[in-house]
Image (cartoon, rainbow, N blue to C red; front, side):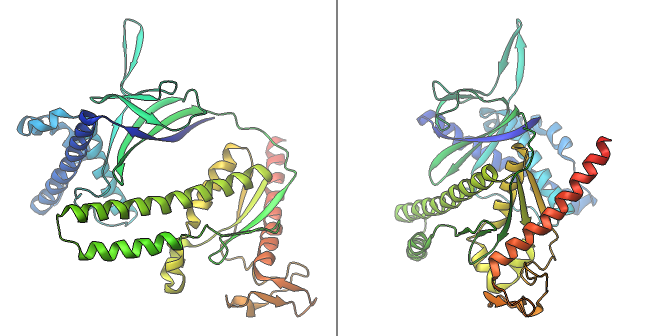
Length: 387
C-alpha cells in the first residue's frame, strides 16, 4: 500500500541561506497578494476572474517587470498561485471564509516541488536528503543542515517540501511517498473510547487520561501579552516580547502533540478493534460553556490520528452513531435513563437493576458493545463477499 507521509526537520541555515529564505517568503507573499488583488479587480470589471493556469501563463511577464522574483525558486511562485486557488475553492465549496491578504511575520512559509530529471542515464532530484550527513539539498539554497529522525537511515520518494519559520526557528516539512505493508490480523481485543472535556480520553479498560496541564504556560502568556500591549511599536523590546510569546505558543503545541502521539500509539498497539464515539466538534464550539475548554483540548486531532494509525497497522476503527445515547443507557440491563442528559450528573443509579454507574465508564462500555455489533455486521458482509 502506497501512502503519503510527512517528515518535519529543524533547519540550521547559514547567513546567506537565511537571507534567501526570507526573500522566498517575501516573493511567495507578493505573488499571493498580487494575484488576489488581480482576481478582485477582474471580478469587479468583468464578473469573472482568471483561473490559476491563466495566472501561471502570465507569470513570466510579471517576472520581467519585477526582476527580484527571478532570485528565488520558480516553483515557489507557482505554488503560491495554487495556494490562492485552493483558498478560493474552500471559500466557494466549504464556505470557510474569503481569502485575505498575507501579512509579513504571520505564518511565514513557502512550498517547493521535487523536480526529477535524467542526464546520461543518471537521475537527478532538486530536493535530496542525506540522513547520515544530516543535510538536505534544496533549490537555490544548496545543502542545509537539518536535525531530526536520528533512527532513520532513509526515507521514500520525496514529492514536495514546505519551509517555514516559527518563533525565529526554521523548519522543513517533507512530503514523501512510501510503500508500507499493512498486516492482516485476527482481532483478539477490543476497547471502547469516549472523548470528553473534563477527562480527555476515557477507555473501557478503566483509564481516564487528561491532557497535561498548561496552566503555567498560559499564566506566562497572559503576562507577556500585557507587556506587548504596553510596548512601543516597532521597538526592539516589542520584537523580543513577540519572540517569547511565539516560543510559549510553540511549547503549548508541542506538549499537546507529544501527548496525542503517546496515547494514540498506546491504544493502537494494545487493541485490535477500537470503537470511538463520534463527536460534533463544530457544534460543541457553538456552546459558549465548553468552547473555551475545547481550544486547549484537540479532540479532532486525537480522532484523526487514531484513524490513520489504525489503518496503517491493519486494526479496525469503528465509529458509532453521533446520536447514540451512550451516557443514558445502563450497560447492565439496557435501561435508558433520560434524566442523565444533564452533564453535571457524574454518577447515577439505574432505577431498574440498581447498579451504580460512573457516567464516563458506563458510556465507554456502551460504546464498546455498540461497536462490537457493528464489527459483527462488517465481518458477516466480508464473509458473504468472499463466498
